[in-house]
Structures are given as C-alpha cells and as structure tokens.
Length: 117
Image 1 (cartoon, rainbow, N blue to C red):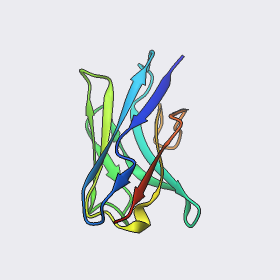
Image 2: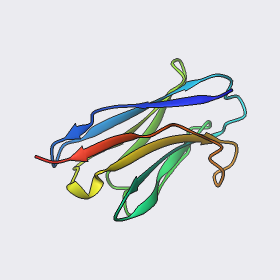
Image 3: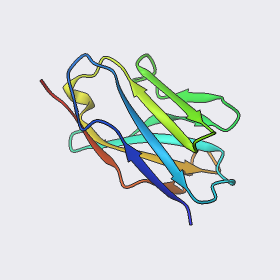
Image 4: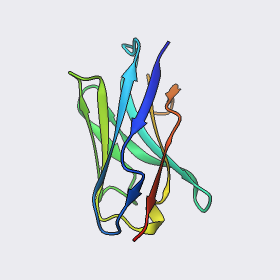
C-alpha cells in the first residue's frame, strides 16, 4: 500500500516563494514519475509538472518560469517550489506518483495553499 502526504504552508504572502513537500510511505519502487498538480474552483484540475526517477523533469509552459520540482531520495520525499506567488496560485495542491507520465497512480489527499496578504 502506497500513501502520499503533502505538507507545507497554508498561507503565503504575494510575491513570496513557497515549498510543498510530498512524503511517500510504502513501496513505491514501480513509480518513475513524481507529479504535482493543483485544483481551484476557477481553473479546475491543473498539471504543474513532474520529475522522473532519472532526474529529468517537465513543467507546464504556463508555470515553468516559476516552478522547480526535485526529489530527496534519502527521505522518500519530493518537493515543489513555486516562486513569485500570486492570488491565482491559490488552490489545493496534490502530489502523485506513477509508472508513466500520463498515469499518476497514487495521490495524496491534497493541501490547501492560499496566497493572500
């Protein structure tokens, strides 16, 4: 049984950089892709990007200039950093892992991030 848990700040000031960490519990040896997504009432479910077990990464074009996703294999964690936060970044953020770039098989429960002064 694989479980994922997101953690990070619930409230972020505009223009700040925030980090969210996903901790993986259980045997995730079949996962090669480590995803971050977010969901808001305005935009719906939105892909942010992923990092692969090889270290390669992909970020969606609309966010790539502000996004960094990286892994800490010693802790079974991976992290999303998003810079220059705006209120439009307010959303529930989800981490997920899976065997293919189109198949996030396991998801965390999500964590709310609100960007507001």
